[in-house]
Image 1 (cartoon, one colour):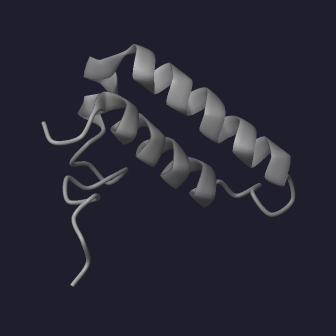
Image 2: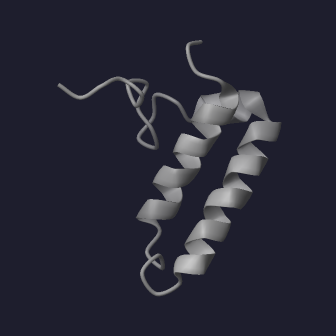
Length: 66
Protein backbone atom coordinates (compact mmCIF):
# COMPACT_ATOMS: atom_id res chain seq x y z
CA UNK A 1 0.00 0.00 0.00
CA UNK A 2 1.62 3.24 -1.13
CA UNK A 3 -0.54 5.50 1.02
CA UNK A 4 -1.22 5.24 4.71
CA UNK A 5 -4.64 4.49 6.16
CA UNK A 6 -4.64 8.03 7.55
CA UNK A 7 -4.10 9.49 4.07
CA UNK A 8 -6.97 7.39 2.70
CA UNK A 9 -9.19 8.29 5.67
CA UNK A 10 -8.49 11.97 5.13
CA UNK A 11 -9.12 11.76 1.38
CA UNK A 12 -12.41 9.90 1.90
CA UNK A 13 -13.49 12.38 4.57
CA UNK A 14 -12.68 15.36 2.38
CA UNK A 15 -14.57 13.82 -0.53
CA UNK A 16 -17.67 13.05 1.58
CA UNK A 17 -17.74 16.38 3.39
CA UNK A 18 -17.27 18.21 0.08
CA UNK A 19 -20.19 16.32 -1.49
CA UNK A 20 -22.49 16.82 1.51
CA UNK A 21 -25.64 18.71 0.48
CA UNK A 22 -25.47 21.03 3.51
CA UNK A 23 -21.92 22.22 2.87
CA UNK A 24 -22.83 25.66 1.56
CA UNK A 25 -25.43 26.36 4.23
CA UNK A 26 -23.40 24.92 7.12
CA UNK A 27 -19.68 25.20 6.26
CA UNK A 28 -18.60 24.71 9.89
CA UNK A 29 -20.52 21.43 10.01
CA UNK A 30 -18.83 20.32 6.80
CA UNK A 31 -15.45 20.84 8.50
CA UNK A 32 -16.74 18.92 11.52
CA UNK A 33 -17.83 16.02 9.32
CA UNK A 34 -14.38 15.92 7.73
CA UNK A 35 -12.63 15.88 11.11
CA UNK A 36 -14.90 13.26 12.68
CA UNK A 37 -14.82 10.94 9.66
CA UNK A 38 -11.03 11.15 9.37
CA UNK A 39 -10.65 10.23 13.02
CA UNK A 40 -13.23 7.43 12.84
CA UNK A 41 -11.91 5.90 9.62
CA UNK A 42 -8.33 6.05 10.89
CA UNK A 43 -9.21 3.94 13.91
CA UNK A 44 -10.72 1.10 11.84
CA UNK A 45 -8.24 0.54 8.99
CA UNK A 46 -10.00 -2.50 7.50
CA UNK A 47 -13.29 -0.65 7.19
CA UNK A 48 -11.57 2.44 5.80
CA UNK A 49 -9.84 0.39 3.12
CA UNK A 50 -13.11 -1.27 2.13
CA UNK A 51 -14.16 2.10 0.69
CA UNK A 52 -11.10 2.38 -1.58
CA UNK A 53 -11.91 1.30 -5.12
CA UNK A 54 -15.62 2.00 -4.76
CA UNK A 55 -17.85 4.82 -5.93
CA UNK A 56 -16.77 6.67 -2.79
CA UNK A 57 -13.10 6.94 -3.79
CA UNK A 58 -11.24 5.32 -6.65
CA UNK A 59 -7.97 3.44 -6.19
CA UNK A 60 -6.26 5.95 -8.49
CA UNK A 61 -7.24 8.92 -6.30
CA UNK A 62 -3.64 9.90 -5.50
CA UNK A 63 -2.30 9.42 -9.03
CA UNK A 64 -1.54 12.60 -10.98
CA UNK A 65 -4.08 13.62 -13.59
CA UNK A 66 -2.53 13.83 -17.04
